[in-house]
Each structure stands twice: as structure tokens, then as C-alpha cells.
Length: 452
Image 1 (tube, rainbow, N blue to C red):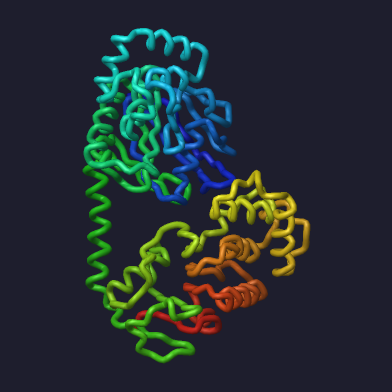
Image 2: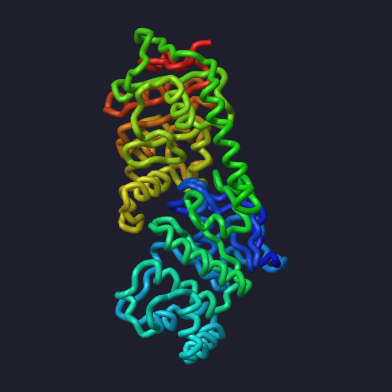
């Protein structure tokens, strides 16, 4: 297997998706690569780049070991398929293959030539286990067969890379078996197959490598399903052992509430502080809460555990939330892009006046002088406020705030605390962690921490 394309320290941003940060990843022909990553991992933007719908900002792309000078992969023989790729229902399967065409004029000519070979087309349908005749209308074909048709197109076009994003699909075990066999057939044709998924799925056993993405980077590459299961299984066992042997003892609640809050539901609180001097470095706030509540038997809402940004009802703002701002864009643009992505409004339909209004409201509220053409001009504390404010606009029921005072000066901390109290008064429940317990005791109704 030769390396067909390589991303080297690639950075990219999108109006609506999590950015990529110094992504290093090589993809080979004839290889099956499973890319696993949550919604805020950068996986979705990687798919758009592979599909030619987004471009990189910096870093290098290599195509067959030669430097690729363009910033977009549009026009390359890469076939990308996700839930938004629909067949034309009124056309037959064979006509759909013709209409989907190729990326270049030469590919389209080759495709037409191959489609005239009726016997060859029928043989390909049988090979890909498409249980329908080429003349069958697409409207009569279930989802699995429609996906298999894309595999057939990849084989007809002889593309070096086929990318399937499983997000949004609901495949049964039988579906995954059939799709897995189609993956193997593409592999035998020296087609590289990239499978994108929020979590490992039944296609895992077909993978030569598993790339785990988080924070816009590939954090770990596993060579085969067994290594992936062994490593992730070991991590789970280690976590369970830590939970069983946790010496922290019962949880104590300090500040302006009485001790002995075991069994208390945090939905009854307005601002809950969480402090633990022994907090593991690689543990997020939702993971920590989930682990502690299982160990201590406290009652918490059913949104835990949670990674990345949650639903409109629950929003998790991680410690590094400043990094997820759309740098190079204005304050108003950041607010519009976040709000439109969360509530499903297309940015093109949002009036420019609304963008300007939101920016003015934010700057007036926090005493920031206009104009600000790039959020990079803000101080670290002001960036943190913006990273919280943009999601608070959606009025979530619960806000999980991880170390919100980090890298803020005294005046910025005061503004932050006033703003968080305002959010609580407006009806949101806040769960706040901090490295300094005094910060929490000044702000919170309750400070929750293990007894030393």
C-alpha cells in the first residue's frame, strides 16, 4: 500500500464546524482507515476537506509524496459520501450512476463506457450485493442499497480514495456485514477507504488502522481492531479501578450551604462549584462529575457523561474554549456563526444588522471599545467571556464551565463573576470548576469537593 495523500501540520477553520489544528495524517490506497471522533473533534471538517468543500489555512498537503500546492482538494478523484448525499429518486440506479459522473472529463467518458457494458454492470451489482436490478428506480431502494451504490461508483470510477461518513446513518448488524464486504472489495481494487464515525462501530474489524481524533488533531493511531480494543479496554479498566479504589471518601459541601448534601440533585442549585486538588489532568469536568457521582452515589441529571459541546439544554464550555473561537472573524460574526449553527438557521438568512447588533450588545455589556475586526484583538479574559456568551445566548438550562477564570486578570474575573450570577438569576444552572477554592466560595451557592 502506498501513501496517496498526507496532511502535515494542517490548520483549517470553518464557519460552522470545529477547526483542525496541526493535523498530521496519512491515507494509503488499499487501506481501510477508521477515523473516530466526536462532534467537536475536527472529524466533520476533515470530511469537508476531503470532499473539496473546504480549504486549509496553513500546513502542507502531499499527493503521492509530491507537495500539493493548492489549498483545496476539489477536483481530485476522491469520492465522499455522507447522510446528505441523496440519489435522484425518479431515476434508475444505473441512471444515477451516470448522473453522479466523475470529477474530470476523462473520468466521465470512462464511466459512460463502463455503463454501456450491461453484463459488467450486472456483475458489479452482484459483487457489491446490490439486490436490485440496475433499471430499478432509486425510490424503491432502501438506504443500505443506496450506500452500496456509492461503493459501486467508487469501483467504476477507480478512485484512489473513498470516504464514508457514518454519522447520521442507522445500520443494523446485517447492514454492517454487507457494507464490510463492500469495503473489502474496494480494498482489493487498491481503493483507500476512510470511514468516519463518532464512535467505533461494527466496521471496526475491517480497519487496518484506527485514528482517534480530538481537538482538531489525531491524538492516537491504533494498528488494527485488536490494538484499539486492547488500548481502549485498558483505559476503561484503569478508570473503573480508580473509581472502586477512590480514597476520597464522602463529598463535603462548603460555602453558604450545610454539610452532608449526599443525594442532593444539582438541578436544585443555581451555581455549584467543584474543587478537587487531585483532579486528573486528562479528565474533563463532565467525566469528573460522572466518576465522582458513581463513586459517591450522588444524584445528578442524566446528561452525564458528556464530551464536547452538548445540546441546547446543556452546554459544556471546556477550559480551552477560547481555542474554538473563529479567529480572524469579528465578534459579531462569532456570535452569528455559533447561534445559527446551534439553532439550525442558515447564516445567509441572518441579516447583517443582526450581526452588528449582537456585537454592540456584547461590547456594551462588558465595556469593550468598538470596532473589533478580529477576536484576536481581545484580551484572554474577554475571549473567555465571548466563548461563554455566544452559547449563553441560547439560554441553556445547564452550563458546565471548566476553569473559566484561567488567564484572566482581577477586573476580568470580577466581570466574569457578575455575568455568571446574572445567568443564574435568569434561570440557568451553573456548574463551575476552578483551581482556586476561594474563587468558588465567593461565587457559588455550594462548593462540592472530596474530603481530604
